[in-house]
Image 1 (cartoon, rainbow, N blue to C red):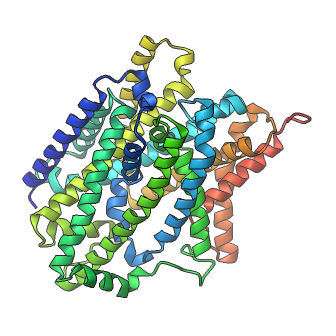
Image 2: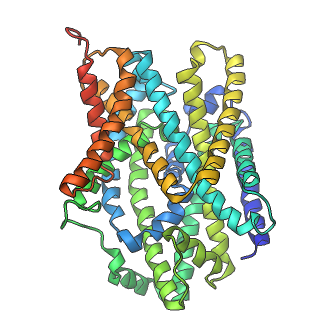
Image 3: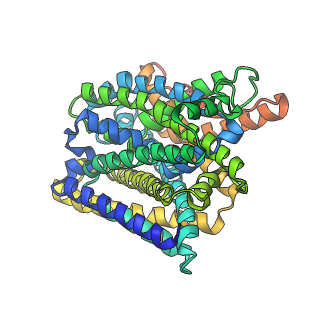
Length: 483
């Protein structure tokens, strides 16, 4: 696949993306930008959410992971499904009843302004680092496929990417994102299914024989009950999946902004339940694709890349498959990444405007529009700088460390919401920030101590420890004789 073909593919997708964004956001005001006007049909929100949970990192990492982790990720996906039901029937009614624009406004009413801002800053840090990392990973692929060929620097790659993301989201916000995420879902699922079809055909496998080949592969093992100390142990992954989904979707402004754009709580619940079941199928297809990729590499003698993330790109672009497979790979990669970045920009703009600047409490509608546009541009520039930072400093160890730190920040948010929803205690609001900072530090110490002293690996369930430390800390700062 030549660089010119990649450029034409990206240009065609961008034309469709900008057309959809312009059409859907042409009459969007502040209500449309922040909440979609709460007029989104539930089925469209469900289509948007299926793709919203996937990023470019998912697109290239999940298929490559099967060699090391088999299908163990499905254990976590089962937990995700339970978590979706908790979001639908516990969090959605709460947020609709309160009528919040930003989720973290709940913390203000429940505890006070310091807790509110603490939740918002933790979200800001996590989303900025996580989203910038996801865009960075894809920028490195585009650098390899296109920019290096023409001698163009990485900073131009990152700047062009963020400029395009800012352009297609700056007018419509959530109102546009619902439509563009729907486009992303259709492109992602179509690319995934067609990639499986073409690779299976290249292997000479019919549909039935493809199922048999995947089932016979040692990579297709799903359940791991044998070693409780392993990262892949079923109950660890299952319960971690529940709490990770609640924290990283139900308490994430980026994800919930789309769910809360539905007209009624019941519509939002139907959207979330449908998304939960569709997500199982989509992730299973990603894992099936991973098995087929390794079978194809073994059959054709393709050299194994240094990193598992490079398996899908290598087979799709340089594996001798029909050109359409490379085109599908590029479309899936670009659509998932730019949609995720646009969604993150909109959520960061909403949270910063309402949680940290006061939103509609401080500004009338006209001034709110000006503030929102400035914040949105500022978020795009900040994300671009973070991406350049990854490019300058980013070796694998640094990137993995930052990604883990970003994931830790959801623990305090989960702990604050759990404490607020399941107790009636009031706390000393000014002491919440130190508690929220201490929780991830203590969690990291526990993780290190468990591995050193007991040989026990704490994996994704670290989020649970993090939230528990936050709850325990808030119990220590309860106002006595007040509930």
